[in-house]
Length: 433
Ligand SMILES: Cc1ncc(COP(=O)(O)O)c(C=O)c1O
Image (tube, rainbow, N blue to C red):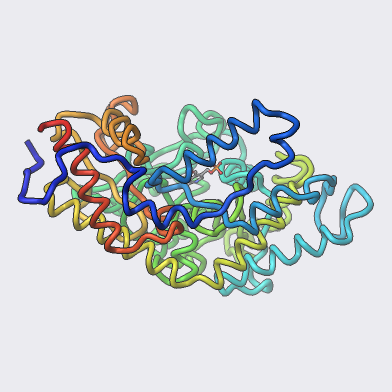
C-alpha cells in the first residue's frame, strides 16, 4: 500500500461540504439569477439555477476550469451577441461594425500587452471559438494533410487536439509523439531523436496535464534544427506566463496558442499569436499572420462571436491587473501538493511547478475514475487522468488537481491544508476506515 495513514487529525464522519468553513469564500461569488428566464421558461431556468448552485457549493479542482468574472458574464449575456461581423476589423462582410472593429482591436492590443509583445513582431487573432479550433487553424495554415506533427503523448499530458487518433487532427496529419522520463520531465533527448528521424513540419510544446516547467527554448531550438514550425500551446499556463511564474515561450516559437477561459479570466475561446519574424516562414516566403487569419475565417469558422471577443478583452484587462492572483495560484498548488505528499499520497513526478499536479491513486486500491467519483460525491471535483504508460484511458492511474478555480474563490494556503485533509478523509479514511 503506497499510502501511509499518518497521525493526521481526522474527522471520521465523511464531512458535509455545505457546513464547511472553506465554503465561506465561495459564498461571496455573485451570479446572474436568470430573472427573465424564470418567468418565461421555468424548466430551463430551474436547471440553470441548479447548475449555478452546484458551482457555488462545489470545490472545483479541475485544472482547466476557472470562474468567469461578473464583467465577462455581463458581456457574454449582452446585446453584443446580436451582430454578424464576418471578416476582420476594417474588412467585414457586413455593415454596422464600427464598434465591433474597435472592440476587436482593443482585445488584440490587450492580448499583446499581457505578454509584453509589440505588434511589430507579433500578430494576434482573437476570433477562434475554442482552443481545439485554434490549434487546427495553426496546423492548416502551414501543413498539408499527411504532413508530420511531433507532439506530446496524450497519456503523458498532451491534448486531444495535438494529434490524438480520435481527433481529426490525428486523422488529417501523420502524428508522432514524445513522452516523459522517469522523473516525469519531458524526454527532450527522445524528442530530438524523433524530430531528426521523422522530420516533422511542426513540433508542439504544451500540455493539459504536465505539472512541470516546459523548456520552450530547448524545443524551439530542436524545431529550428529540423526546419519545423514550433507551436507552443500554453492554454494551461498563459496567466502564469504573463505574470512571470512560468517560462516565456514567445522568443522560441513561431506560434503561441492559448485558451482564454482557464487562466485569463475570460470566456471560452482562444488566442493565436503568430510571429512576424519566423525564419522558416521567411525561407518559405509565406505570410504566417495572413495564413492563420484565413484558416480561422473563412477556413474553419463563420462570424466571430463578438460578445465573446468583448469578454476576452475584459478578461485580459483583469489579467494585467491581477498579478498577485497568479502568485497565489502557484502557492496554493505547492501547498496542496506538499500537504498531500506529507500524508503519503503519490505525487506523479514528485512535485508541481505550475497550477496543477497529478496524484497516482492505484496504491489506494482504486483507479482515477473511482477516485474522481468518490470525491465528486463529497463535493470536490478533480478529474481522472492518465499517467504516462497507462494502457487504457478508461482505467487511468491518477487524478489531476489544479488551483485556478479555488484561488478565484479566494482560497489561500490555510484552505489548501484543510482541503488536503478532506481529500485524505474521502479517499483514505472513509474508504479504509
Ligand atoms: C493544452 C490544451 N489545448 C487545447 C485545448 C482545447 O481547448 P477547448 O476546449 O477550448 O477547445 C485544451 C483544453 O483543455 C488544452 O488543455
